Image (cartoon, rainbow, N blue to C red; front, side, top):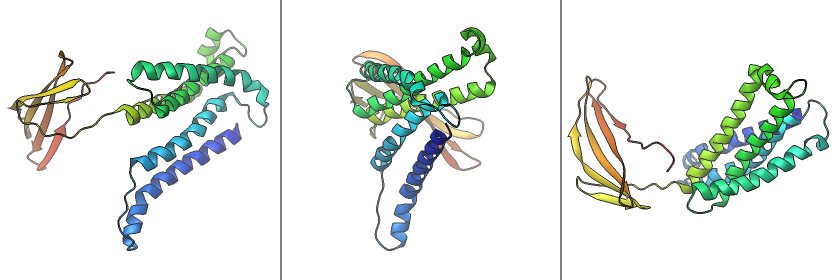
Length: 244
């Protein structure tokens, strides 16, 4: 297990170096008089994807490996079952939640389901070591639950990153009151502006009516606020939360 922890720490340090180099290299390049360069999202997406795959694999098997010495045969069954479930269920999730198949989104789902499935095996193994499953779960220490929820939280984060990076759509458009904009079957109608002043700011609200294929979805209320004391402008974004 200590080797797996060491390997994952190396991967985390490598990810840190990627961020550091990607952030500072354009500045250093310009200061040396070599011209301006730009390192964008594709650079980080590609490198992080390759770093996250072995990281997720080790994160899954790590809790099942014993300290100091262990045999690979002890985790072959959990790996085979979790791997099969991950490959199959990831494909189902991509087709269920997306309009088209993306390989990188599929890999993200595989990594996430792999982590959750392997931790389910670890939970069952630890809980049933000396007691029944229900009794063993109740006897687990808080530190163990913290570890599990932390790892599962990372799995959920990977799903979010994979779906957003591969399926999010962003457009910057300028609309006047009475105009609308369509994208992917959604119609955004700018119905108008209205004043809304607070105790320490002057503001106004822009109302947007959203429909999808002619069906009303929601009305969003984006807001701009000018704080008189600080003399600063703030934007209160309008967000329609949920799975669409």
